[in-house]
Length: 209
Image 1: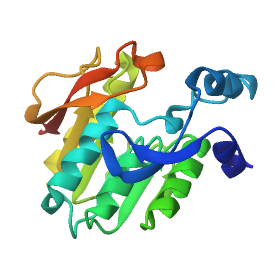
Image 2: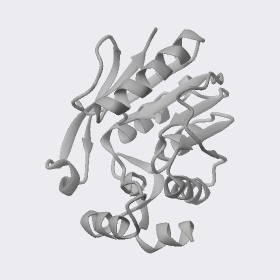
Image 3: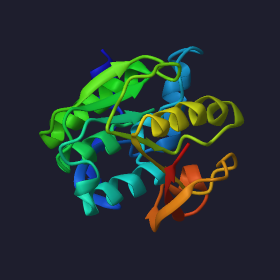
């Protein structure tokens, strides 16, 4: 049923800034948002149906610099559509774990991994209190609220302290923390209905302890 919902509300198309990756994306963002709300109060917003700026920048960075992840274990935290996980797998990362708490997100991530012919393990869980080790931890667009930043940042800093390379993609969200290392900047095409602009200047940051 979840996979049917994904297919019914999206089309498979190249990601604007990462055309090497095919993604099930919503054609009508407003209609999908309304359909998701109609499905029930417990249903999270359909973040999985869009190629958000932070994820696009992170995916682009990984594909342009595959040595960052090739042959290393990767966690894509709050994966959404699975875009970053798919990019990591395309760049040679093994194994790749796509993590989210939204079952629809993971259905989309599985569909997108299959569409791109890459292996991605999908894990539905809140990992923010865990201490599992990965060679690389990736997170796109996770600093969009005070609550989310307050939970995610300690996890990312702990991962960096255990020796993981921790990279985040962020288009200048309101709760971007200080003390990050700038690695790259991109002008990323976005869904104007959601972002109010057609292009967002987006930075890939490295998180340290």
